[in-house]
Image (cartoon, rainbow, N blue to C red):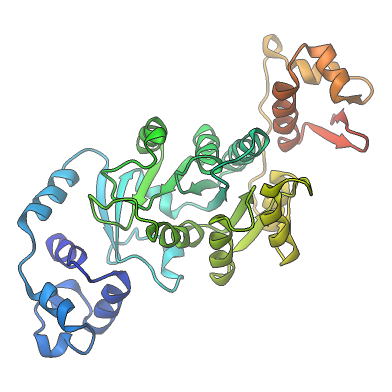
Length: 352
């Protein structure tokens, strides 16, 4: 059974759309492979028929079997009972998915987070903080393992209870970009990496838009954190809308080029969000964010100095001794956890 799926998936020149067409017409990989040229020719070109009717490349089959023999590696097919139900709703579900890690995460409630590869420090902090808070609320964070916002989202997801899934545009035996190698190992151990592309597939430009439809397809909604007007993240948002998923965007400065994509999405109907709670409310999510209970010995210095009247960022920096960057990241986390509120005039107040 597995060999039939592999044979079909590894036919050169026959892409996923053709595979889905064949499986719809014939019912199973075995039925496709035992059909004659006359039956296949109404669904494939002559060159595709030639490739499908030829014997499979034994070296490629052997390489896949060797990879499948390694711990944590598996092949998921449309016939599997645990094939993600959300992907069955999209127009072009992958016939096979190569999986590395905990594939059960594909059937958990998911939230996609995408954004710029050249993100600002604030954008990276936002992505990681939102992902951490949403993961702790029980959502699995899905992204694309790119530099910038994707990587920050994965780090935040892994730090929370819901973990994280990376959908990549190469074969699973290749890590792209190489700088995310350590993050990929963490995902394989505590989360999941998936790809519809065969082992050995290089990071070709056309693969990443196809990867994006799976990020949104797996998810109940997609959050965009910093995106230029021509960003690939906007492709994910557009596909998410076409798939009937919610689209969320974090607003930014009118002077920032990386805010323009998010502002365009908001103008088009995406939900403007300022906190993780905004997303959970829109999704009517039953599980709520639970602020961690800190032991007395680990009392939060920011919360300590906010016990009285509201304070400004500069005043808090002076009282806590934290740098402005560290303090801003801490304030965002506390706000996402519902422990403080931001007030007009750049002041903050503790929520009792």
